[in-house]
Image (tube, rainbow, N blue to C red):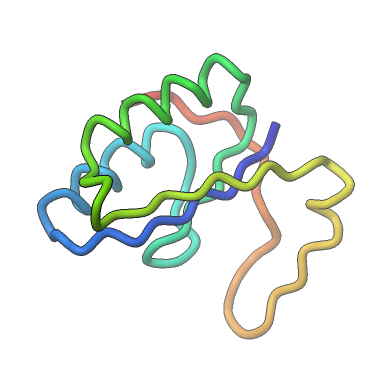
Amino acid sequence: MFYVVTFDISDDRIRYRVVKVLKGYGYRVQKSVFECPHLTEEKLMRLVRRLEALIDFKTDSIRYYAQCGSCLNKVLISGYGRKPKTEEFGMA
């Protein structure tokens, strides 16, 4: 499954660590947005656990949006950007 992961993290140190983990699962499309192709349920839950271990639940937020294959063909982009890539990523 293809996931769009967004985050709002106030602490620079924590944000850096979250980004480092996410780079192992996908690619960055905006400062706080990653696209993560080919996440199985197991990989998604591993990612969620890793990120939850880093964030402050009182101030930080991470959202995971599942996208189906036909949804990827309907992505609209205004301005700079490319359609979602679906290649595999190795975990960091």
